[in-house]
Amino acid sequence: MYKIFLLEKLPFLSDYLGSLKENNFSIITFSETDKALQSIEELSPQLIVLGVDVKESDLINFLQKIREKYSLLLPVLAVLNFYSSINFEQLRNLGVDFIVKPFTLEEFKQKIQSLLGIKQQCFVGEKEDELINKLRPYISREVKREMQNIFKKILEVL
Image (tube, rainbow, N blue to C red; front, top):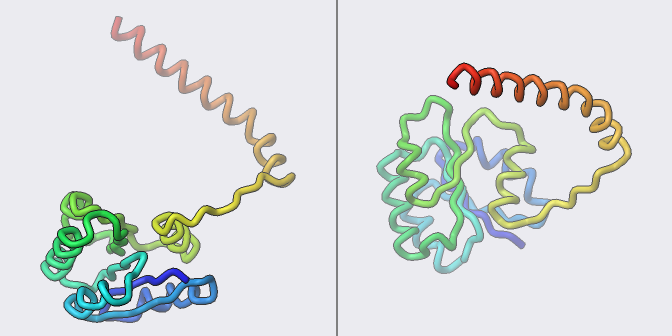
């Protein structure tokens, strides 16, 4: 069972994560960073998901404390609004992965599974083969056009 800590004040993400409960996930929700920090040692989550409604100063302090204590061993996913004023570079420096709203439930699940290291089985079936074969001529034409454009630019420079 994978334990995921969810830190948010409004129930947006808990609705999304609720669909994961039947897939071997346990979701533990917190509305305050201090309570989440205290519970990390006791409950040992495999992932922390941070909601968009957490104040930036609380968020940064929380992340710094996690990185001091757990280095990069504990993955963190921040859910951000497209128009968010949060410094993305600062999040990257703290080892935080993020996903920007809007996103689909499937994109969210894939992001969580990749952070938890859950490998998804991918088999190319007949339908996928057919699709690839149908697109192959168009792809090759696009590649040829792109190569021609690159060569033209090179010749212009020379």
